[in-house]
Image (cartoon, rainbow, N blue to C red; front, side, top):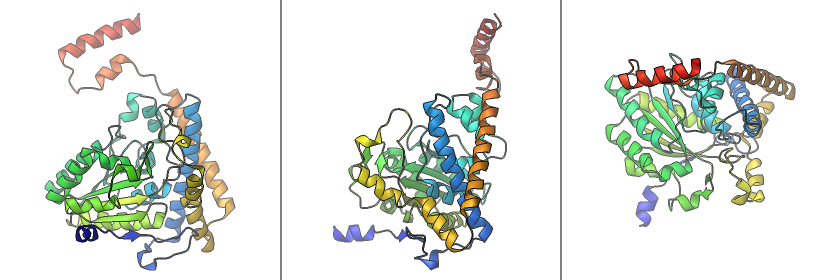
Length: 358
């Protein structure tokens, strides 16, 4: 038994410690000063967006929302390692990756409200809308990546789920298929410690979630998910391997969501202690990276305040555009379902159109 457990050990990767000091220079990615600042700008933007989205949800101005605060490094670092034609298949918390891969902010707002235009992905934006069925995106990712392999396209498919998602059958089916066919895919598990309200130690008896890769015959890595440089480094390495034809990778990002699971009535104080929350707040990915940049002379409080103000203005503009967008109608919904409407839907469309005109 001990031999089996030893074989399932996976590397733990960290570049920056909690004080912002480099502890693993061999893993330090080759990023310019401008690129390092860009990573910080993106995390600041997402933190401001998350705070605003929580308020909008409470005001009834936003529909479904799963807070992302605390997980910015795992999200932004992994997406930044991608190429523009790589394909993202997200879970419902993975809005930041989609926005920086090209999904317009105002369309995300419409999507959260249930408006069909929110799901109309613009041409050239290589994403799917957030998957609500937990784990389903893992099977879809294996299929998309297989298509890239069969077409001999140097693209990868990347997907995300949470720690609870690894308890779904689709998780195992997806990574097993991907490993069997050696498709160009990257599977990310954002282990934020609680699947809604169930702690990870009750999800599995495995020491890590990354070691589940062993059964699929693919590499697995456990990463400090609050270290944006570690997330970038490991994701880029995995993406490069996939693009070179060396198959998929499973990445477990150890992180923590500061807010509730979703804004649909979840109360994290019922299953998380204040001591645990305080512990993870000390590991805040923005605080850590800010210290790193300040030590290098690349970031100032004045620049952060400017970025925060720009974020507020961009969010306000997107909200205004979403508010002004034409209301969805039943006929327009039916029109979006098929390129050529079947007769049954044509009749329904005419019926509803008549009711609206009346």
